[in-house]
View 1 (cartoon, rainbow, N blue to C red):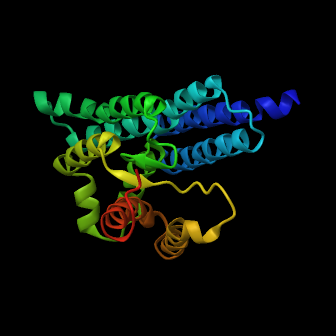
View 2 (view 1 turned 60 degrees about the horizontal axis):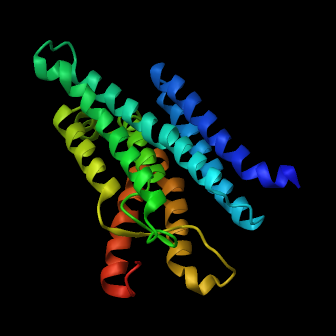
Length: 241
């Protein structure tokens, strides 16, 4: 009984551990390993809530632990990744702007912190999200250096090492994390599959993209997630909130 009660918290702590390991790999410029551990952390993050609901052991402690773990895995890690990308884009320049610019990457961490704190207080986000969830944002940011490394397109590579493009992505990320934009959740609470046609269709679409485009699919999936939510919310259904 005690283990069942603590299982969600154990999974949450494994999420935190995964984020810590991801950070170590970012410091070593091993973005693929960092991406893998962030994915693992998000996996634990999904199932801690799943088992908390399944065993009916949700608690205020679990809620706080979840946000603290997400702060590292989905807040600190993408901020450090963007810091590294901006630092590399500055090259050997010693101008004041080049020296300061990399620190703008940590705006992602600050915006993630604000979102996570606000999420715990916002009662509107029980069945959907308002603003981009931190795990989705983290996957988007961590996929960027991998797309740059593995892309066969010179144009894509040059865009993703351009400081102006990276700063634009940073500011858009900061905005999207806390924007008043309703986005659907992928969590399905029940066996009525017809009620989750949107979620199931999007999962299938995402799997197909991953099969054919591999890592390049990740930023496309996140962008599609936002656009699908906006279109669905605007034209095809009652508002998500």
